Length: 167
Image (cartoon, rainbow, N blue to C red):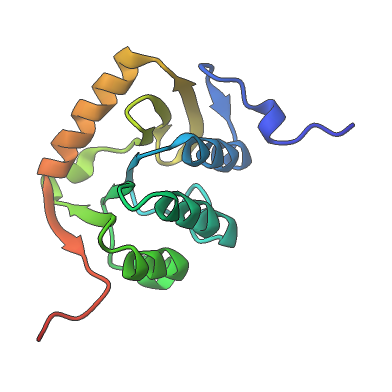
């Protein structure tokens, strides 16, 4: 029997590879019951433009009206063109989904991470290298990443809107 990408994912170890990173992103999104916090450069890694990622995020947001998806990105200008399905989610779930862009001072951060329910995490050590770790119930790392997410959130300059302002 052929091994799947998911079979190659061992929690709490350092893992290499873009395909494995995308599979680990699937796992983290699937673990989320209430909240997803995502920090990324621009969502070019992790398969965010795919139909599969759209469906997983849509299922998460549609599961419960109280669910929240908050993204902090370094660059949002190209997001509607690069990830149109994700932008459609923002149109549909604007009450539950927010995308922020960091200010210039915060753009020095070169890692990325996902937190699911402040209990599970996926952390890519550097945006240009497909090295990452994911784990469940590692509260020390989760607390550190949650504090870091809050700091990055404070260092945002604006939110991405799905519509035009006006009356």
